Length: 280
Length: 345
Image (cartoon, rainbow over the protein chains, first blue to last red):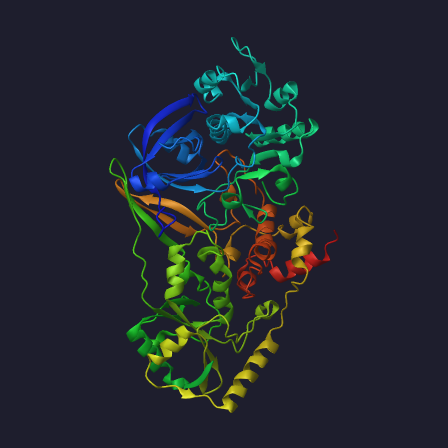
């Protein structure tokens, strides 16, 4: 992504690969470092922003940056093995080179949220963009009030960032509420869907921002339940997804109504999108 | 605006001279259709057929092009291909097609601070001098006048030629046009007032010959209210999803990016794409926000007549009539908009 050619990615080296979840819907977190020192210095982003990752010969896809901007040494993307590009990316190992360009899109309004409680509601791989905000809030802990993380996946095997949650749960200034969809031996936390876990936890909407990311059906019921709990529409944030190619508002693909998710999104408050006319 | 004339028999001389100094592109007959191609011999130029099948959009926003090349493996490198920036003259472009560039310029060239700029489009746009040709005899499905345009509009070209009988009436519109004329030998004459009047009459006659009209008034507001109306199922019923309406549209700008490579080398190639295709919005997860023709036809109409006006303050349509002419199942965008007006909401 030189100044002259926004389609051309920079070269980035995979400096580590961590398997978050195994099996059919395997998830890996790739830690990337730009090869060019100039790019390393000037690349900056905010939580919620996205990056285009290229596997040369296969193509390019857009991902939420899952690391926090407070981490200056590298950027991370967490990727579920699903389509053509993600399958090719999952074959990449430490030391391999990929292309990366960005950051793209708007971001979570972490500055405006200073002094507020933050409630995270994630499902499956939808936790990836939330992780960026969570780490950001932890690194700026005094700026935020109560932090609650509600996260669920189909099975315990599908839960991402397990070690990190284990580490975080030692802290006494945030609460983690994990869940899986169906009963498993040895699981001693909530069993059920994220919207139900939310209902059970019954958080107060007072001075609180709720951010939710996950499968569309989960988002739908999470938002419904948040509104029932008394959250106002502008206290609820989510991200939208569309297939993308250019990432820079030109190729026309990611429109929902007259908005382009790549540049007008991906982050929207519920009051911005509740009446949106468009195919989602 | 300087007004000149050129005897018709001098046109080959003019084109020959332009061609000897710059790259010259012009309308040429190819397999029974008109196409904008490099002109090597002025005799190749065809000014009898009104519109090229593929709009000259393809000269600026190419149907396929390599955005960058790469080498694969442990020593991956990327490189942008050189974009030719030398002056190029596009002769014989019709006013509506030239207006098409003006409509999509903000998409590729940015409209506000911080917008990304497509260097391929921008450099080609900037290197092109447009010599337009007025349409004396508009076609059955022409409706440029519905958008305050005219078959002899000077606004979107650098120089405009109008056929006034045995001469061309030549209007030099922009500085780029002036510079080009200055560079050419003195084969133009100053236009007389009488010739100017003939030019005006010619335009008037051409405007009167346009029989179709799209009633665009209130369309944006009406569409705001009928996204979920069952009308769209009916409007899309005959569509076979061939995508020709989008490929031949001077304002459609959607594209795909694909990797083409051998074992070690490759390039990321941009190709025109169409929102009329099922795969266009298909997510890797299997989810498709626009799973049926209804969604896709609706998106096309909204993009032109609701989203473009909201985002850029202009309808995404030039009134060239190509989508009507070439639709294999006779979907007629003028009729669609007429019916939109009739829908009760």
